[in-house]
Amino acid sequence: MKTHTYPLPQEYLYIYNTVREFASSYEALLLKLDRAGHEDVVKDIREVLRSSSRIRLLSLPIPRDLGGSGYFTLGSTVALEALAFHDAGLATTVGAVWLGLLPIVIAGMLGRGDVGERWLKPFAEADARGEPQVWAFAITEPTAGSDYERIEPGVPGSVFLTYARREGGYWVISGRKIFISNGPIADYITVFALTDKQKGVASMACFVVPRSAEGFRVVSIIDKMGHRSSPTGELAFEGVRVPEDHVICPPGLGWDFVQLSLAYSRAPVGGIALGIAKRAFREALSYAGSRIQGGRRIMEHQIVREKLANMYIMISAAESLVYSVASRLESEFPPPMGDSSAAKVFASDVAVHVALEAIQIMGGYGYTRDLVAEKLLRDAKLTQIYEGTNEINRLAISDIIINEV
Ligand SMILES: Cc1cc2nc3c(=O)[nH]c(=O)nc-3n(C[C@H](O)[C@H](O)[C@H](O)COP(=O)(O)OP(=O)(O)OC[C@H]3O[C@@H](n4cnc5c(N)ncnc54)[C@H](O)[C@@H]3O)c2cc1C
Image (cartoon, rainbow, N blue to C red; front, side, top):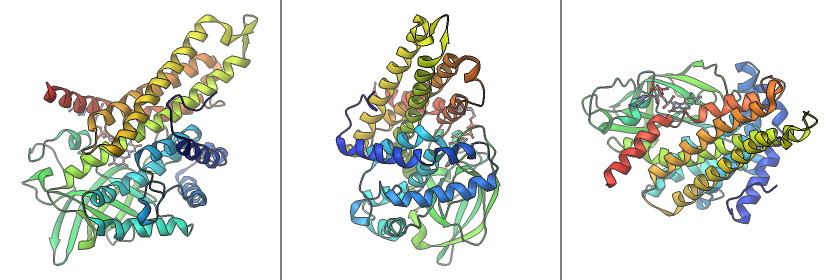
């Protein structure tokens, strides 16, 4: 069976196959991490990332003139799908590195070439040396999750905890961030902070905080139901001082950078959902082809065939939407934000539905922890929650539709 119904160009199929081969060689370890404690996860996932330098995976979306491979949203979506087919946690870990770098890539797109030279070039060089840097992206706060998504710049009403103030030639950042993918292992974190309590998000700026900065602390590693190989953390910034060249965008532009980052990252998250859905479909198909009930393979029962056909149809539709948007994100500016949300929402809903159907097709065995189907359902669920919940993404889509009437 072909891996894709969407007509991906040959070079992208090559990326897909290369990344699949890499991820499949770590699948046994990653499955072990699904049940491991935080200490093992932190140690082993860093090792997997280190070995990804073999195929220069993390440099895939870095511009060529800065030492990367120059593939942007389409290439990263293909890679995330390939990773998620084997382990969604690994896909989230890699995706979080790219999300952490996105504000810097965006600064470069908007004419700040110096920011790219300062951060992306060393990133690609480190990957080439086999010592890849881990990045994270921190917007969510204990009291501001969806609120960060829905608030209009300048409108008060929500409680934000992370602020930055200028002191001498430095910025001093204080506050908390929660649910940060890679937070516990990141070498660098792109942190969004308000710079004026009165002005709210209209004063937001974005900073790079190195893990080594004094006053930075991982408060806790969060125990969660899926994506368990991806360490998620609560982070504290207690008077962290960063110099001016750690400012990615100045006060006032931070909110635009958040929106642009999410526009560029949501369709790729749809790629993660797609990888999970395709794996669930493959597991269900293979089970249905070998399980005998009622004197024949269960895939010969009409109702099971209908389920398989519907799973295939939904996956194909999600794939078309995800890849057509991922491709448009490279050619249109401003990026099609609503469609990127639509790709993430649709693919994640498909992933949850297909994972549930896979369990149903596998009956009692599907419900056990001996088969991978239950992990796929746990992994699929997160794709409806992070990168903005699907409810918030639907609200964002409806805002765009209504404003266009
Ligand atoms: C494993 C994991 C990894 C994550 N990684 C990152 C990361 O790397 N960086 C980062 O910054 N964040 C990250 N997040 C945070 C994630 O984006 C947030 O959890 C998400 O935006 C929802 O925020 P919340 O959890 O505070 O939920 P809440 O905002 O409290 O929402 C709770 C419920 O209320 C609904 N709701 C809230 N407001 C509205 C509204 N106005 N209208 C309708 N419904 C509403 C929501 O849809 C949801 O169903 C991660 C989260 C998880 C779980």
